[in-house]
Image (cartoon, rainbow, N blue to C red; front, side):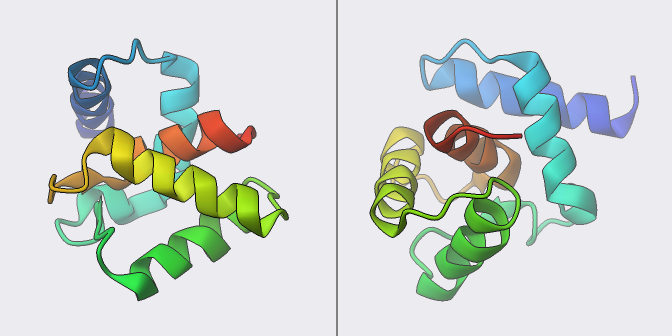
Length: 108
């Protein structure tokens, strides 16, 4: 098993811990959407308390990758993803956040 597959299994475990049975095809696409950032310690997570980071997720993933245009819907999806993952959880993996956003907004 390669490094990417190991990370996907780790992300699937995170989702299972949240009570979500992951759609592995969607999780693989969400992981692919992260690009090489999944291999970098700092870039592989999302700092949901950082407004600039959340703006990057909004612009670069929600709008550009998913094609979402409704600002209120994007805001609601971001809020829901953070709440689902747990706002106190400091290790929000980017691929899992992208998965949760893709589920809420559709796409990938």
